[in-house]
Amino acid sequence: MKGQPRVGVLVVAYNAASTLASVLDRLPASFRATVDHVLVCDDASSDSTHEIGLEYQATNDLPLTVVRHARNLGYGGNQKSGYRWAIDHGLDIVVLLHGDGQYAPEVIESLVDPLADGSADAVFGSRMMNRGDARAGGMPVYKYVGNRILSTAQNTLAGLQLSEWHSGYRAYRVDTLSDIPFESYSDGFDFDTEIILGLLKAGKSIVEVPIPTYYGDEICYVNGVRYAKDVTLDVLKYRLRRMGFGAEDGAAGEIDPADAAYELKSSPHSSHGVLMRWIADRPAGRLLDVGCSDGSFGALARARGGHHVVGVDVVKHEGVGENLDGFVEADLDDGLPDDVDGTFDTVVAADVLEHTTEPGRLLRSMVDRLAPGGSILISVPNFAHWYPRLRVVSGRFDYDQRGLLDRGHLRFFTRRTLERLIADAGLAVVRRAVVGSPVEVLDRGGASPIGRVAKAAGAIDRMATRVWPTLFGYQFLYELQTDPVTERR
Image 1: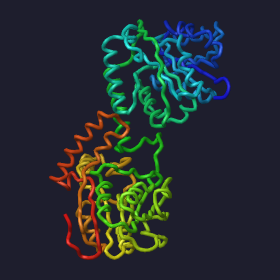
Image 2: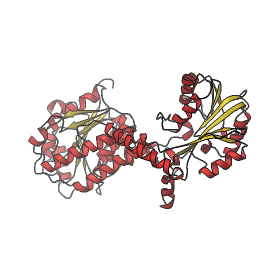
Image 3: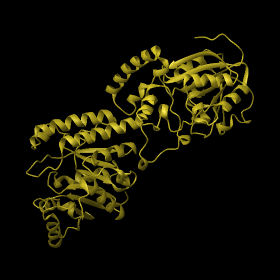
Image 4: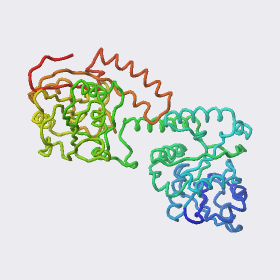
């Protein structure tokens, strides 16, 4: 921020008639002299909160506006109205302050400073940073224990290391608020959790500063059990979406599947791991990577097998030029284009056929590019896996961000329908494999405890896949050739 930032304060108030004036009085003189504006949002209180605010406005020199909502918007809804006000008024920083006096106005400048100097996008006051302060300040044991348990669980699921998720004393850069869809978040008390997840998803930086703990005779309007359930579900949903399950919130902005680079599966038990071992069995030669994405898979084939790799895909992703020896941009629905010159010793279509409207056409065009003795390597998701079956039988079929029900999938295959497609293309099976679920995604965006769970779950899943491949197999993999050969198991 250039020059002196315009700082505003949003005071959320509900039945705060006995505390509002003292909260405003406790703002430091140095802060009062520089604050751009203070907005008191009375959320349809049943007491005289609004009248007290108006009286304070009339008798003090604090730049103050007092509004009263005609109906109760809820804790989150009240914040939304205040953040809209901050954006509309061109403020640089907005501080959230509670009108019940639970958070100390005396330390408000410590929340503003990291935003003003550009070292943070959001600053949270934490009662847990200094050991013992929370209990010394009167936080009840049950609230302290609940806070610690919930914060630990939320950190593990979200991959953060916040000392506290449940403080309501916060400050934000206003342009940061403009970058996240806060208006789509909850109107309830879990709004504070949802805004953390929104900041995390947007890659914003969060800084914590210690604040004193104060518990007086204020009335708590939070249903603790419901609150714990809501915030836990919020973080679980976030984690599941990061893993690829569930459709993305529309307000969060959906990504066109064609524009998103495909994630390389690094596990040796994954489809990419198995295909790479098959490629390593083959002598160095010309390799065509169909649906190459950013070329990460092809780069491994170059490095490990010494292959000359040409990629083809509908979009030229960043880095593909450095990763591959050549690239052709083309719509694979039309089959391989004429721009793909020559023949290839190996053609790879890893997780590609399901993204095309005419997979048979694409597969036949791959046959046309095979050199004598060449092989086609494919991997295709198994629609008969237990997860799609469960979604269908429960009547909850829908697309996910990633995985078997990736919203970019246009065709679905079982082992039988896939092998029929292979035969129709005039190809014979040289060898086949089945891989289990990519349980390593459990650790995507998370912490090490989840990684240990994923390792154990992976071993169990691989065992189940060997016992019942059509139910537990996540993907089918094939090496195919045009000449009759003895199938290798």
